Amino acid sequence: MLDKTTFILTVPPAETRGAARFRLPAVHMAYRVGGGPHLFRASIPVSVRGGLMGMDNTGFSGGGEPGPFCQEVLRECAARGFTGALLNFTGRAAPPLAAAVRSLGDAFQRRGWPLYVSEAYGECSDKTRVLISSALSGGSLRQRLQDALERYGPGRVVLAVERVAEDFYLPSPSGQGTPLTREELRQRLEERAPQVYFSAELCAHYFTYMSDRSGAHFVLFDDGGSIRKKLQLARQLNIGEAVLDYAQTADLLPELLKEP
Image (cartoon, rainbow, N blue to C red; front, top):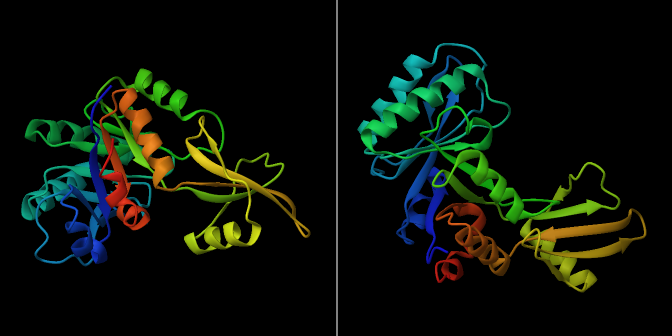
């Protein structure tokens, strides 16, 4: 079992200064791959240098050649002093983006830089590190991580911590709940005063309640304690890196950084 987790923060441009106080590696989520594909950049302070490039695929049209896009990524990394990247590409693997992941995986490895990718792109290159979400509404997180380790191999699996707060109707055949804000979760806890339980399988807290209008509900949520349990489980499986969303976890970071 590993003794400690290496934390990486995904940080939007507006939160750069606040996140800096924690002195953790930052993924600057100021980029996206759009039509072309081409690299697009949001407003980001000129002073930002170092850390990692963070990118999603919002607006990607689905076509084009990956070569010029990969060169754009490498040039921007050189200009900003980035030493790695996180590609938060959602949906099924699109062929141009899959090809880009293969090319960037090779290019980043030659430079000694890590390349983190969403699970849909995990098999596009064996030179990437694959993000496995901590959020589950059923099953077992331990089994989920063990399956990922078998699929991708040791050293490639990274825990992507998602702070869950969802309200499910019962029964819930789709397994999809309604996301709750922190204030909405607080209100439900205060108004219902429920008995709160901890699921060792999901590594999350839960409670149930009845509504006169909508019937039975199941609420699943995380706090600092449940996230610490998830990190501990990952360490038991020798998963040593965890990516956390700064906006989701800023209030919990002082507690989490005290782990184990």
